[in-house]
Image (cartoon, rainbow over all chains, first blue to last red; front, side, top):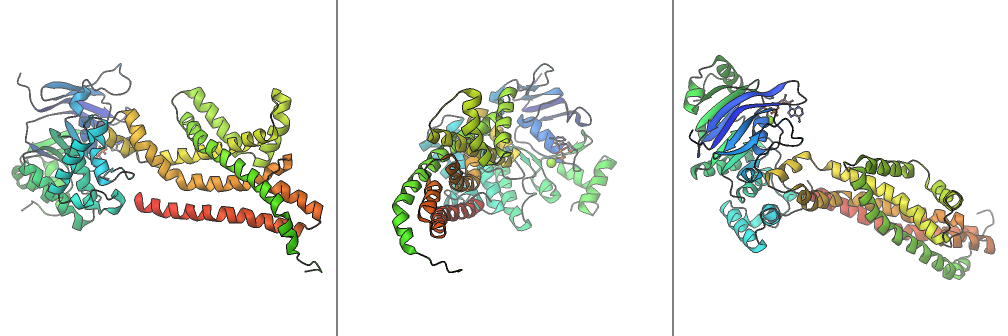
Length: 258
Length: 223
Ligand SMILES: Nc1ncnc2c1ncn2[C@@H]1O[C@H](COP(=O)(O)OP(=O)(O)O)[C@@H](O)[C@H]1O
Ligand SMILES: [Mg+2]
């Protein structure tokens, strides 16, 4: 059995045991793929990313990463089901609402985890953080507090904070949904830059034009299942499943993305 | 004013005695403020702990002090603690105990509200960043909670300064007590009590300005 980059097997998750938000999900991902997850609101897209990040306790199934056991459902474990916490350190996640820590400066947010969780020296972490900020054109905001930044800047800082930990894969959960329309481009632009650098990504977004541009693969979820899994050119112009076509028609108000 | 003539000389001649009372008031306020800042945080941690008995003790403590008048608390501690528990302390210590526990209860609530105001997504972000729960508490939750709680903590401390006046009733020679005895000695209650009120006001005013300033700064920072 060849080991693959990310493998999700029979993933089940419910809140309170009633409705299965994820009802036996299966998929595999290769390095450098950029999977965009689309689907109606409440279809479990966030839950899927949160499970992969290790933020949720799953009911059943397993997740492997780079061939290593990472998360497995275990009936007798109370809190989480991480087999190997070290694997989690290879995964980065950015959330819809920035989640920058308001008591720390931009630089403080960036170096917090490298220093406190990874034991990197302050000097080295600061140097790496400043280089990264410079690359993103944010070095002049290094000493600003998050409250002084625009939404687009906040989200780019949040992405930088995750990148500074050298993740093997980045998870993005609707990172532009809270932004004013004119600020979306700078965040999507940064994600496209990461795509050029061959970063592996899983992206949840409602922006179908962006999805078409960045995805190497699109997964359409509904009712806790993967309904369709296809390259963007295929799924947006000629969806195989009627449900996919239906959904796309609703969100786009047109028949296909041109 | 009903034939009553204001006599400023009474004010000046009373000042030394009022100042000695003020010293007691400030001492009481200072000691209890420190007790409240530290104790409040500890009680808050207890009230949010996973160990049930600890939580119960903290919640009962908080509610007892929040749901009875401070004046009753002071009198009760003065008369009933020696009676029930056979504990005898000097009056100043008793006053520190009563006022200190009172502000501890209110500050615990301030800290708790602040911790609960931190969005749960920050806990997720910490996990995603690989911070352990201890490090999360120290570097992310605590500093934010203290920042968020500062305006309420300061407001509680101003309240404490005013409340110290209540200990005059159990014969602690604070500002209010000295004012009361001067008023009876000199038969000049109008001048004396006006001066006393003015002193409390002058002490509290800058503090309440600081609260406003802090709130503005915080709102800008935590936006
Ligand atoms: N913490 C939670 N507790 C209970 N129900 C939840 C919780 N989080 C999500 N849900 C429910 O799970 C379903 C899927 O949620 P989510 O994964 O956020 O969907 P999506 O991101 O696709 O909109 C929704 O019906 C939502 O109400
Ligand atoms: Mg979602």
